[in-house]
Image 1 (spheres, rainbow, N blue to C red):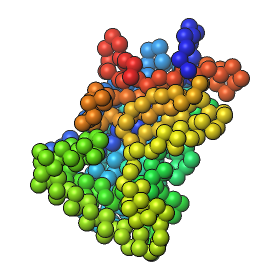
Image 2: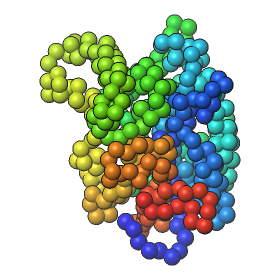
Image 3: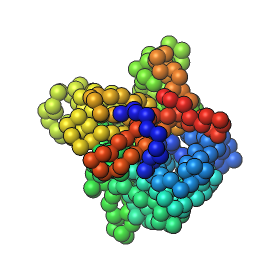
Image 4: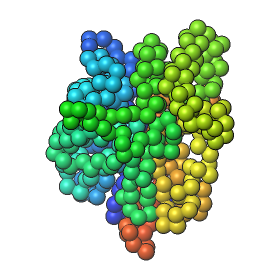
Length: 373
């Protein structure tokens, strides 16, 4: 898919995912340990770079592939239990996120208002509350309706016939949604029914994260638990017990009602917790079996990757703009990498269509603003 072509591309597609904007570094007069996004300045520069200079008149589509906002990480206590997922609570959380990252929202609004620039937003599992009409309408009104929102339960988004983009949460039992995930109460107010994985983040992860901000940013998870038992024994045991108790409380009855489950009880549990380790055959399935697809992109796992399962087929995971802590030494350099995909498209939707696909690392405004992954 990489090739040298001297003439200018007809279209540029940028794709970012999993930025996880929360309430900001400080909230309620104290440091907010639930905040994962610390690169406001870099993101503003990124948006300005691709909407000015030589890109000013160029057709550029920015695709935000899920989890741009993180409703689950807002340290908000006015609404309790299921009210946390109500339209009033969700709208207030959105306003808190906007206030915590005002420069980013203003830069995104500016980008979307420029001629030949388009912003497409695929909803992920951490920003699922954008499906609530009251929240969605407020969000879109902030950008003067110039951002396109793609449904939470969609099969993906195709900016071109040859390119498919999907966040990735729908393939996991713990994080998947369906058409009945948005319901109304007796007063006609909408609320979200989240999957058990979202409850787990809000009820368990956030409690430990408020004490240790790194708790959900360490990979691989197995090594995190093993090292934790050695170097931080009591807190790790607390985390394991809390996770086990939570799972039994919210999932045991469901499993019991299912009777015999495929793969047995232990197999069922493994499938639910094995959220970041999809087999290669499943990961590449759509790309390989759909002859019209040349590029397949996803996010969700926070694991940046570019690979070539077959000739003229490219798989890209756009990674994350949050800090990850890698216990796998082979991936240690990914800890602070602001990764994004860039597709240079020639003759789009044409028999002569060519796509130059890259996974890049944003380095800020300097002489060379990105490097190869």
